[in-house]
Amino acid sequence: LLREKKQRQEEQARKEKEKAEKAEAKARAAKEKLEKGRVNPGEMFRTEQYSAWDGEGLPTHDKEGKPITQSQLKKLKKLQLAQDKLHKAYLQHISDLEIYFVWVLLSSGINAEYGREGKGGEGGSEGQGC
Image (cartoon, rainbow, N blue to C red; front, side, top):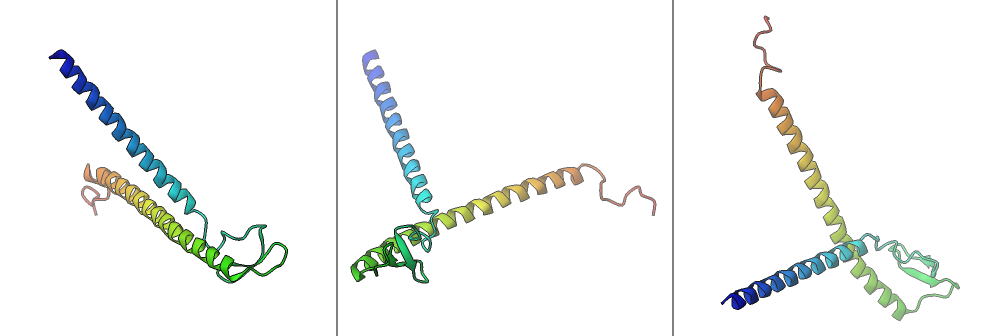
């Protein structure tokens, strides 16, 4: 009976460990995805590998001045589109964080003001002898 109880505890501990490892891996993958999104898609090809770009940031000529072929351009557009999605998700995440922090600051400020005003007579007209 004790052996069975110990086996169940070990099994439960193993499952909890696996669950924690999966959650950690998921969080790590989400962080990596956000990090990839930091790069602006319009700037992602502005490297030494290319010498000229169009208005969208897509390269038109390689570093030797040769025009980019249509097949290369198609691949680059596809990469830029994928980066655009990552970048938008990154910007949304940053925006959500900013909204959250503003909310925290405002709510803590409001509570602090309420705590000061609610306790006794600051800002009120009682006792000022007008």
